[in-house]
Image (cartoon, rainbow, N blue to C red; front, side, top):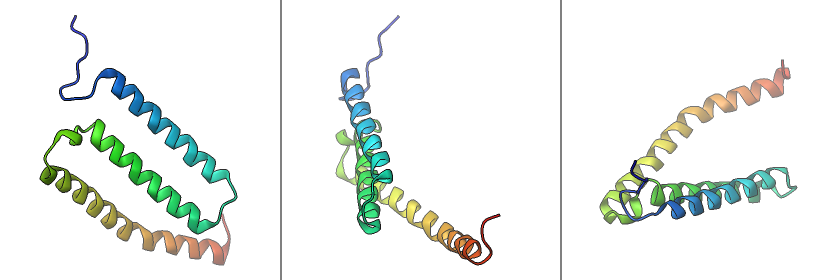
Length: 107
C-alpha cells in the first residue's frame, strides 16, 4: 500500500500544521463571541479572521500557493462575488425577520 503523498508542495506535516492554525483561529473566534468587546470591533475582527482562514485554506488545501496570479485572482474574485451576491439576497429577508421579531416578539 502506497503512503499518501500530496500532489504539490505541502507535506502531511504541513497539512497538520495548517489544521492546527485553523483550529487556533476557530477557538479565538469562539472566545471573541463570548467576550464583551464593542460590536464594531467584533464584526471587524470576525470578518478579518474569516478572510484569513479562507486564504489559508485556499493557499494550502486548494494548492493556490503554487499557481499563477491569474488563477488565484480568478478564484478569489469569484468567491468574493458569490459571497456578495448571497449577502445581498439574504440580508433583506433577515432584516424583515428581525423587524417582525421586534414588532411582534419571538414565537
